[in-house]
Amino acid sequence: MIMTTEQIWLEELNHGAKERLAFIDFSLQYFGHISRAELTERFKTGLAASTRDFAAYKELAPDNLALNHKDKRYYRCDQFNAVFHHDPEAVLHQLCQGFGNGISTLVESSEVCLDAVRLIHPDANIIAALMRAITNQQAIRCGYVSITSGETERELVPHAIVNNGHRWHVRAFDRTHQQFRDFVCTRFTFVSDLEEVSAPYEQKNEDKQWNQLVELHLIPHPEMAQTRAVEMDYGMENGALMLTVRAALASYVLRQWQVDCSADHRIKGQGCQLALANHTQLQGVENMHLAPGFGIGAE
Image (cartoon, rainbow, N blue to C red):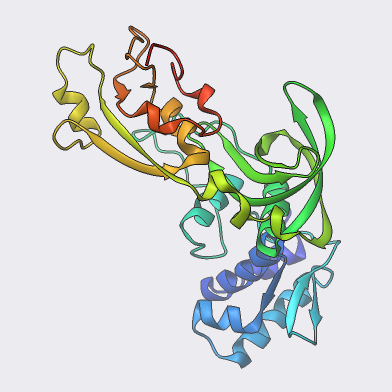
């Protein structure tokens, strides 16, 4: 395979320099801006060194960034084209844990340790656009395909990206319905910045379901004759596990863990090894129809 001039130039850099340029590239793509101070804070280098790094990046990709002299920050240009490949799955997990370094690569698959769950990966450009909007508290215009209404254009104000155990979704204020909702990241057809700061009522602090914490009291399913194995699986103490989760995520946890949420724990033979002991305390939590058996059975 013939290497481009840029690829040859990057190959000649030492790992430290490559990390710093990759961090600049990542920050521009996923946050929309970066400053010399942020680069020096991340890598503990001096301002002179960071100036050289930005000069090197600008030589490599002159159309990717522009310096705003007022706040001394470099901003992503509309014609931005990523210099480094940022694998979407690796990026999402790094963002969850705090970004470690700018070089996000897909780890080579192991033949003896397999993750059979993560089969669907969102598009990196979609995730980048969502992250920029979240970072800058801005609204987006997007195309979104839903199961009920097909593809429509929407204006959203996203504030968090979540792995619900099955797929990645973004939590956002939907201007059409005037409420906070969840949107699956793989269903976006395009995302464009509206370049306007969102209103206070559209921001995360006003998302009541997101900010409300609920406690899930989980026990081994009463139908099980032997419960010790389940208690060991989930690290239970005295036969129970107490989980504190955001109300907006409770139903996803209960579905992912196949918890019987019916009032009298009537689900049998469907793989439910856990039961919810405090289902009455979850009245009013959204999307509880997703939790197995919730709302079934006499009080």
